[in-house]
Length: 135
Image (cartoon, rainbow, N blue to C red; front, side, top):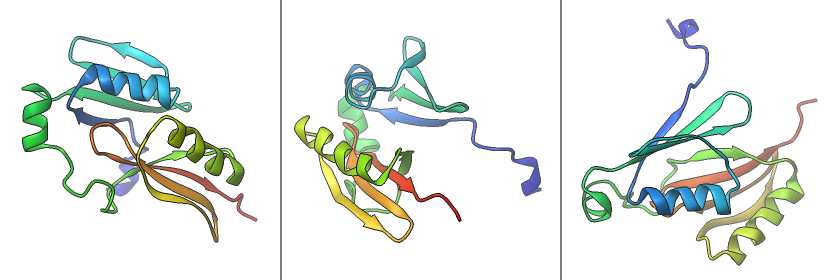
């Protein structure tokens, strides 16, 4: 049955404060809103990928009690954003640091490229990663 799955249509994340999250994903990460409704926002990433942010019912206080990730960047659960080069991973880390974004794993070169991890305002871990071209 696995051949029936053709890709990932979108990722949907519950957020504590939709406005704060939109600010982070647009003004800090540079994504563009493709669709906005009262309680959710969609961003196109690359050619076919979509990230949806959905206001958690009950707002930030209820989100903190029921949803906020408890490990704050210490767990392996994350999603990765594609970088352009090894150098861009290190430059993006400095860009985020200048904007007081929490870095949870410093940029480093790895056998297949480079990577770094940071947190969004909701406690989700994001990776910025570059893979060397396959030979």
